[in-house]
Length: 270
Image 1: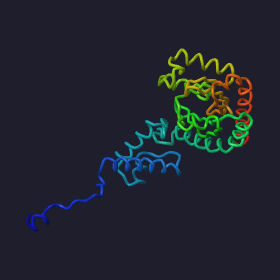
Image 2 (image 1 turned 120 degrees about the vertical axis):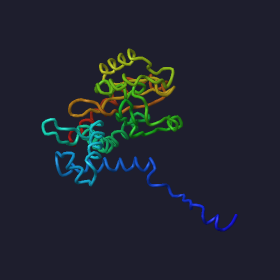
Image 3 (image 1 turned 180 degrees about the horizontal axis):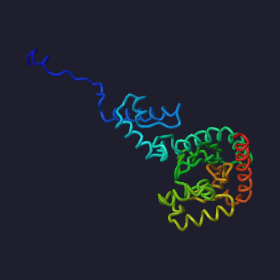
Image 4 (image 1 turned 90 degrees about the vertical axis):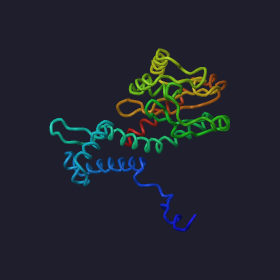
């Protein structure tokens, strides 16, 4: 091959092109965040206001606002025809604030509960139709088992999920809509069984599972509620089923006391 043929070949670069679909997606996300930032100074803005401030076409501003409205992050005021921040954004902010404060307030009480019971303690928070364990204080008896236990579970198979659903209809409806994926042979698998379990949980004031999320493990959970009485988190005790069966009543009393104390402290701090 001649030198001229080599030099005539277009140069190649390993640097990704800026107009890839991923780059377009990132630009769209950034633009949407820029739209939300516009409302930091004004309660309501029109499409033209957004377009002018961001230096974008009105059609682009309208498309961004429409997308944000579809997710509840902005909404259109029917009286003025202008846009404002949506309630879902407020809900997300409240959740972030609650969860940060929740862990700070709960941690000393969770540690005390672990020491008194000698069992693993969880702090579970609601996330859609699932429960995510934001904190897990382990004990030696469960450490090996817990090493493989995930932090997220469908709410129907956990004591925390049952007790949150018992005092939060939104979770009940979300789980009914998404169904009941099995985790063990003991997992609830039907809407009828799930609704019956939630009713029983509401009556007892605590959620109880025996081998429904992880075979061989049982748990008892109590709700953490806001000022309106709605549950959005739970504290639970986890132990081998053989031990828990002999301690259910005492465990229920202890976890209920801690759930009430956490709720009370959060109410005082709000």
